[in-house]
Amino acid sequence: MRTVLVTGMSGLIGGIVRRRLEGRYELFALNRRAVPGIHTYRADIADFDAILPAFEGKEVVIHLAGHLGEDWEGNLHTSIIGTYNVYEAAWRHGVQRIIYASSGAVIGGWEREEPYKALVEARYQDVPFPWPLVNHETPLRPRSLYGCAKAWGEILGRYYADAFGISVLCIRIGHVTAEDRPTRLPADWANWCSQRDIAQMIERCVEAPASLRFGIFYALSDNRWRYRDIEYARRWLGYAPQDNAEAFRPQE
Amino acid sequence: MRTVLVTGMSGLIGGIVRRRLEGRYELFALNRRAVPGIHTYRADIADFDAILPAFEGKEVVIHLAGHLGEDWEGNLHTSIIGTYNVYEAAWRHGVQRIIYASSGAVIGGWEREEPYKALVEARYQDVPFPWPLVNHETPLRPRSLYGCAKAWGEILGRYYADAFGISVLCIRIGHVTAEDRPTRLPADWANWCSQRDIAQMIERCVEAPASLRFGIFYALSDNRWRYRDIEYARRWLGYAPQDNAEAFRPQE
Image (cartoon, rainbow over all chains, first blue to last red; front, side):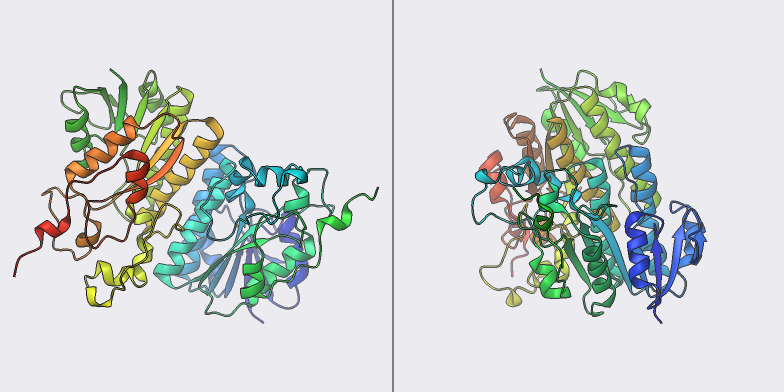
């Protein structure tokens, strides 16, 4: 079985990943707290020397750990320094692939402008048809400090892929919810991602050919009102989402 | 006279900026060492509380300070934490515009691929005509850790412009040299920028209309073999470079 190290396994998406991959890969966690039933390397991700041993002998790293919040100290500690440490430790131990949990927040600033604004506010009468999509080549435009810190991990990933030959696949994750359905936020009709769809995306990134050196993919369900491109992931990863936020729309 | 705070005034470009702007603006320096003849706020840029007073009453900030090198600690300290501190302090004191000294290194990774590789290696027989240009919308592709750290400042700048209404103009500076001519590096035929051309670019950024909320511009001389777009800067800033690396080509 291939060896896979997961950071942030105690989070929502970490649990989803665990359930999808357990038994088919040899899973390890890098986490502050022990993850029950999983061999856990316990360390603070901002402590390079402490996390380094966790990467020895691992083929794939799924880097989910990040700071959820707008305070600078937390973003600096966990997402900026921590993510640098993960890339550097992975490279030093010859890890073949890093799957980096980025976020739609890195381009969410486009939602300040039409037609994206109308789409996430569910003002569909104001949306041209067809509407332009944001894709993997659209300039970064973070909507938050969290989004800036997530973008940092993509930029660093591009550099590590180019300079050191490690495969880096970045997933710009949409809104995954604990209740596994869209919330009352109007933006969820565009940006929601079901648990089985994010699980599929991550699994396809683990399984993608080694020749895929760098990529940026959007993880969304097949939502009618999405503005983020999923065709690129369909083409290069075979991503085929099974859900659609529209199925949860109240019927009149 | 408008008040302008310059970080990193003791560097090569800092000196060029000083000579161009002195007497026409009220100049201040934020620097570790005192800059002779200039009111200097002496502080470590990574110390937020220490630098905050320097921003009071300033209309424009020209942020040149950055770490030149590939070590993580230096990049983290000066370019990542320091640049965050500059944006945050500028915002808190109501600064109207930040001119951020970015670098061509943020897209220099494209030089790993043709036809950019041929251009910077001066293998002109391998270059198609016309060749594609890298512009302000081309995806970031740092060529170094330095380039990653510089890209961080652009991303953060986009966020501060969007979220707080501060005008942020990013200049991706080419190779400015102390001797003010191309060096023996073949890439200089493409990427060189003369001292008077970078001075003009920075001055035009200071003078650009307040309605220019965010922009990314390449500062290069009018080099025949350039691959970075300068038309966008010509259009929106009126940038008109006066030099061309080709003028320094040895005659046969």
